[in-house]
Length: 283
Image (cartoon, rainbow, N blue to C red; front, side, top):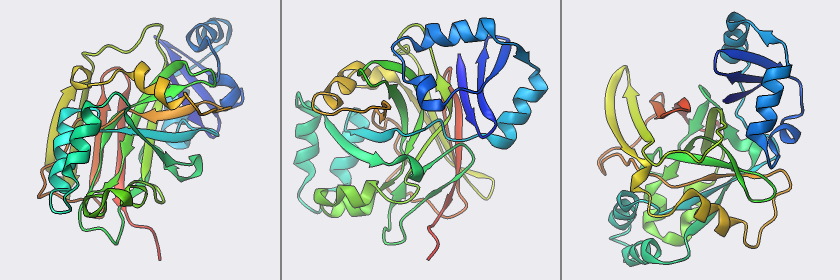
C-alpha cells in the first residue's frame, strides 16, 4: 500500500482502489499494526476516482512527515565508507570511518526537524560555504513510538562533503541545515519487511543532460534496518515515531558537485521516485 500526505487529506492507494482519509497524520501512522489498520480502512471507505487521486497527488502533495524527527545512519555501505575515507584523507581522519564500518555500534546522527524537510518536487539546498555538495539516496524507515518499523519511504540526505572532509567534527554543519533533507513521495506500507533485493537508483540532470546514473540493492547494506532502528531507540523516545535514513549506497564521483537547478531523482523499487531541484537558501 502507498499512503500519500496531501494538504487535502491522506490518500491511500491499495492495489486498484484509492480512498481519502481525513485522519490526523501522526495518529494515523503511529500504530503497532499500520498495515492491518490501513487494510481495514481501504475495505470500509468509499473509493475515490483515479482522476481525483491523481489530482490530489499532483497538486497538493506534502512530505509524508508530521511531528517526526529525521535521523540518519552513516557508513552502512562499503561504498559509503570508501567515499568518507576519500574525502577525509587530507585531514588525517580517514581511519575513523573504517573503524565505525567494522564496529558493533553504528554511526547515527540527527538530520532534521520536520519543518526543514522537503517533499517530492520541492527544492533542496546546497550550502554556499561548501565547495563539494552531493545528494545521498537512502532507504528511509518510518519507526513508530514503540520502535517498530511500520513503513518505508525514500530519503535524500544532502551532504556537504568538503565541510565534513575538513574535519569530522563538522558533521552537524555538513549534514544539518535548511532543506538538507527530502523525504517522499509516500509511505510504502507492507505486511513483510522490505526485500533485500530491492533496487535503489539515482540519476542527476543538468540542463536536461544526464550527469550521473547508478544503482545498487539493499543486499549491500552491512547493517539491517531492524538493527539500526534498535540502536536509535536504545536511549531515545519518539512520541510521534521517527524517520531514519539508513545510509547511502550510490555516490557520485569525487569530481562531481551539485549546482543550482540540477534535478536529482531517487527511485526505490516498490516505493516510487523522489525528485528534487537544487537551490540555495536566500540571503
